[in-house]
Image 1 (cartoon, rainbow, N blue to C red):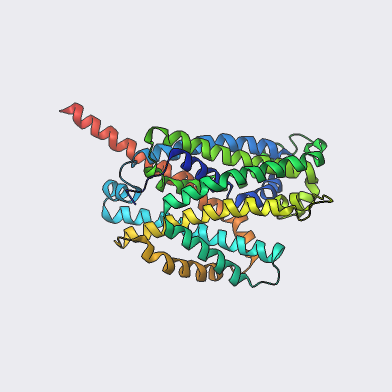
Image 2: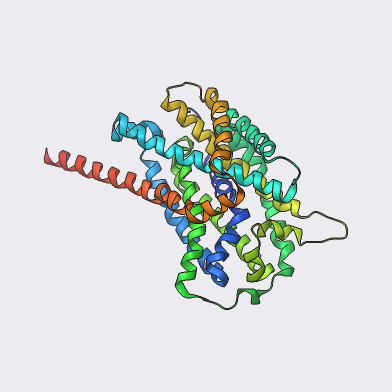
Length: 367
């Protein structure tokens, strides 16, 4: 893994797709439940949060830019505490994978392929993810670079084709509910931004170290901006009452479009989601496999990919008995879980590093 190198541009693209990921399908509905008509204000705050959080993650990543995350934790916190911290972080990544593969299966069964067993859909998708992870980070990065223009084209088409249906009166009344509603809506968006902390493990493998921080900040900020655009567009097109009743409003943006010469326009939304979701899950799975292999001292991480895949497949049905349970977990628990690793964990790492450097400088000056 230490010899694997990707360009800053590839990392930027991966960061964008990672942030958009599964969120593009759910975020409009989740934000509007809290923010109502002030969804655009919650979104603007979310963009500012994306800049600050990505800067925090980049600062943390710079501490192990030439080492790797696991060796850094062992060196800084000792063998056992470093391993515990790394394992806890990997558990967060794997829980995220479990949620995403079940989300994908639930969406497919509910909307596109209702007669197909949920288990079959998740199994096929997970197999594709495993194959992608086994091909390695460089291959995934090149694939993202190839597919990203198509992602942009489809996103642009979805937005432009829906603009004639947008009604700006759907944004009124402004500041409805005050700061409380804005905060509630922003929290839903922030929970997805926190997940981008996972990319700190990829950070050391960026070839152009001087451009890595900018790529991290730009990637996360652009990704969040795309989520805000699709959320605002959903409000403008459907209005608050319809948006609150729809769990997949961004997919509905494609369904409502009708042309005499072209049908099933919702495929555009599906393609956007599948591209971003695949790369997010594949990166998380790659990080999990690489991390587990380092913990158990296996030279080739590919050896553990299929065992981890089987483990996550089984665990997804044990931990998530139904789609309703998944929705309840995301709304009630995921934020606290995500903020622990996406905010407090990197702040802890940065604070410890600053204290270490301060003590080291005092010892040097004392001599």
